Length: 270
Ligand code: LER
Ligand code: MN
Image (tube, rainbow, N blue to C red):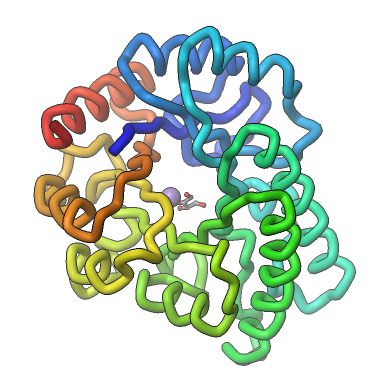
């Protein structure tokens, strides 16, 4: 398993859940110095970054870029797949396709978290699901043509009211029927929503495509009460060998949080 750190460019707004929000050259230098294998980049728009600058910084620091994440497309871009207005749904699909094209250049995956949208007031689960699956299918086909894998992240009920647990994501993917879309468990959300963290990982098995790690309080792993040795053992037993990425709050301060996460995870993942 490789260990990643979620970061965002300096112009990212506070709704990006990242430990470093800075010039990419600075965040990547820090991540590499701490011993991370790669970084996940949280983006609002593919135009927001200079591809050559990213490529140069990754090469200089020997870091991978496993995932481009898209939460800000929902929180700042204000577009999502379940929106009642066709125009807004279309904008969400086009934005995600743009991020898929960017990801393709780096061999990265693209996550679908809050940008899936929510069940709007007065609408049913079925209506939201129909719109979500239509938008995601179009993006997944675009991604497949570009050789990109997508990952669907269950997010807890206090942030969104649709696809909260890993079994719910697995069920949605069963209806989607696109093999290039996998599940992306996040231990912070699983601690709130899943009956058993290790049980859900075992049940999702080969569908697990990428993992976010944060402790019960969303601080660095090791700073709360989740059982990370058991979680890593569960990932090993399903044959997961990808990235586990620390997506954590910048507390007590960004540098300390990033350092605590890598020190603890290196100990657990020998
Ligand atoms: C994003 O990875 C996440 O975990 C959410 O809580 C916010 O989009
Ligand atoms: Mn997450």
